Each structure stands twice: as structure tokens, then as C-alpha cells.
Length: 266
Image 1 (cartoon, rainbow, N blue to C red):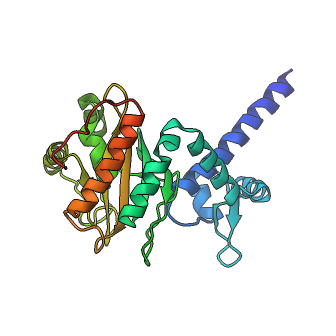
Image 2 (spheres, helix red, strand yellow):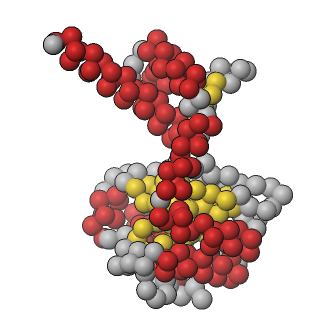
């Protein structure tokens, strides 16, 4: 009996480590080696290496033959896409996202609100010669992204205060790291109905985000276009604002929200 319990515990720990490896690779923006993963997860390189080999064999991660570092594989991306497709919000948003992409020619991003930030559910590539991509499954910060600031502006005050109780991240010199400045930005976002974040998550990038609201008016997600700052200025063009706002309102209405989205954006 003790042996069975030991095997069960070992099996659970093995699964948890494999999932932690996948989550770590999904969270960072570049491939990682065995040493970096071991340090990040607080375990030995030999344990990490054994799990990596299994995950590579199953297609969940890929090892670069040049750098020997690891990144997420196509099989995991397929599972993520399947999960996104199963989500009501992703299904409802599919056609409005395509219409928005065709109108704006920019990449379109659908996100959901989580404790750590805005998780990207699905994306549509733009039609510009220079493409900006955001990986599905990645997390965007609350104070360093248009989607995150939009979420802070429209979420309940109790949730906002809980998030802002911690330190504000600094991704670039343009990130908003002062609470008083951020609070003024959030007030402006509520008044106009949309958020942008030029150079705040990465130099040279900007996004334009609107909220997605559910049947009772609660915040359920975010819709945004993203591109280089030369294509999405600050402020974005009136046509871009109307296009994203119209698409977000269409999705919100399909999710049960009655009426117009808040803000003076029309």
C-alpha cells in the first residue's frame, strides 16, 4: 500500500513539473535552455531534461538544432486553438474579427481577463506588408498594454484595487508605473471608451482595445488591433476607433449585452 501511494505521488509531481515547463515556455517570449528552466522551476537539470525529452517526443515542445533551446510545439498550439474554438466568446467573435481585420488591415486580437493579465485567446493576422504577431496563450500586463488598461478601467473597483495593490510593471521607459498617472489614464479610458498603449509594452508598437461586455454588463474580454506605431498612431484614427468599437459592440450584443458600449467614441 505505501508503495502505491508513493507511485501516485511521484506521478502527480511528474505531471505538475511537465505542466510547469509548458507554462514557463508559454510565458516567456524566447526559447529557453535546460539550465534556465531548471533555475526558473527550482529543480535539477537532469529532471528537467527527462521531462523535456518526453514533451519533445510527443510534439508539445520543439528543440532548436542550432541553439538546443526549447519552445512550444505545434501540438500544444493545436490544443490551445481547440480550447479557444470551444469558448463561446471565441465562436461569437470569429466573424466580427474577420470583418474588423478586413476593414483595418491590422492584426486582430481577442483576449480574456485573468488574475495575471489579459490572456490572448485567438488572433487574426493582418494584411500589412510588415506583420506584428501576438502568440495565443500569452499574457499581456494590466498597466503595460492597451487591453490591460482597458480591463482596469472597466472592471469592478474591488478587483482593480486588488490588482493595483502590487507594484506596476515596467516593460519600456514609456510604461506607466505611477499609480496617480495610471488612475488618470483609466478615467480617460472610461470617458472615451477605448485604450491604447503606444510604446508601453514594446518600443514601436501600439494597440487599440475596446471592452467586451456580457449580458449583465460585466467585463468578459477584450478586442484589439495591434500594429507598428506608424500604422496605429496615438490617438488612433477615427476610422480605426469606429471599426474596433463597432466590432466589439457587435460581439457584446451577441453575448447578451443590450445597448451601446460606453464612451464617446462614435
